[in-house]
Length: 180
Image (cartoon, rainbow, N blue to C red; front, top):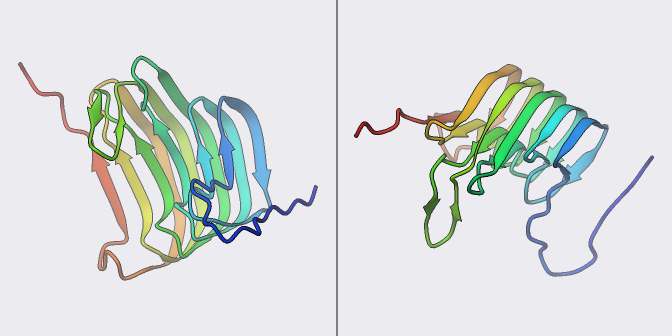
């Protein structure tokens, strides 16, 4: 099926995810061209057994797992994800994983956290980065209730923007819980 979606409005649309996979199992997304300002593809809570292949993405926040653990007492999982043969350009991130902390947190701009869950068996394979701020962003700012297990990045290549030069990726891991 060929499908083209485009806005003719002069107003910029917020949260323009290309594809969101939420509470879904056994999904294949392939051969899409996505030009947007939010996630090219996002694996939301309880997305399992997903294949994404042959995408061209531009201007996005990357191909993202998350946000997980955003809501108190909710269990969010993402597992068995295979992302293959992606071209990502002019994005803030290429391959991205974002997990909220396992405790409630909040600022004036963002409130969330306190949920639990895990990210397991996610592979990004043959991923071309062109002028992205981060080729890889992994932010598992969870306390002890969330886990990120078995994430593989392979055949990643290309260029990043100069925004974080000379760094091309970022990894934020949780520390151990404070001892009382």
